[in-house]
Image (cartoon, rainbow, N blue to C red; front, side, top):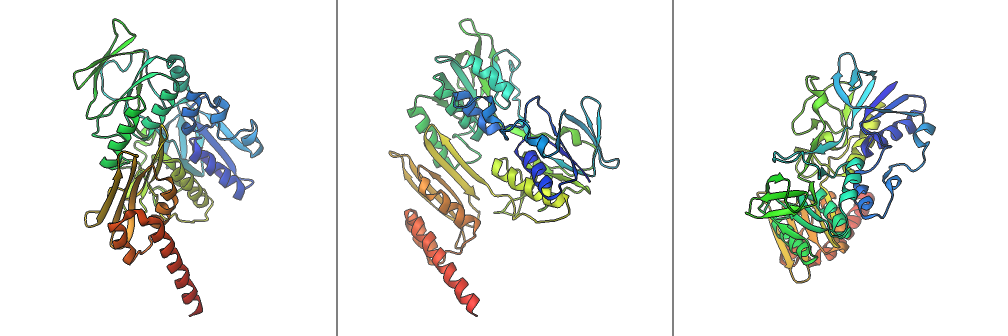
Length: 424
């Protein structure tokens, strides 16, 4: 059996290793589009700060790790897929055949339609090559403008701030992290970041970038301001790498549509990680969930299916934990709430504490928190466990700070029910 894996990020690596563990003699080829060993993009901020060297970003530390596992590595970018012939064509012109194919090609930065994006000193922060350029320009005191304050943007922002640059962040949304945090949480994160010395403009966009008279770059903002910059970083979001599957017949919406076994609509073709659009655990709708834990789960599920041992996942789970200059924020499940649900919000703006709970019936379906790290495991457990809270739902609506009590009471009730059920 020949397994072809397109992508050597976390999803591709975990899938390859999982297949090898179960099928010691199958052929496995893993293709990466960058001239680097498999690495984690989530480690790039640590590289920017200087906490690690480039080797520290590598997913596997032993140089001969994949060779010892007999996982063949290829460098190349897929340009076409023929599902009838079961072949993938690379940019080099090489054609690779497969019996089972896993598409784990990840995502790429969205390029905003702004004049001047091609100027020297304007960079995304997505690859090791990008990181090298940013390290060269982001010296202490450098004037840096970052476009975007989403999840990735906030992680990059922290690394830049720690490098001692003069940082300005511009976000089109009305708050920071608008696609992962409620308005109350995102607004509080903005206040925290500004308190730490970072200038933040929300409800604002960069309209044009040009060469400056007194700086390498000059950015014109939608609020009427013009900023001199030594470096501009674009962190305005990412989208799945799907161009090469055009015309293949694979069903695509925002990402590759997959079932609970990570199978596409085409026989012997699977997908995992950021390219996929899978069933959401909370809503049942198909969503793109670009987080590394989801990619790892996808990869294990896909690997099982590729060797014929299906173990369907429970659906992708929205789980975001973010450290922004020391303020820990988290959102879980259906954090935006349900149309027919109930919610409660607790705010302490002076101490940067925030908690919002979303209920449907007596089940906690989503939550957002800031500065409450003790509650992270509790929130995830209640939501993923779809625990029926009974009278505790009304107690929490009155006083959400009693979350831990509710969790312990529900856990005890479940244990007692399990004992009674077993005895019966």
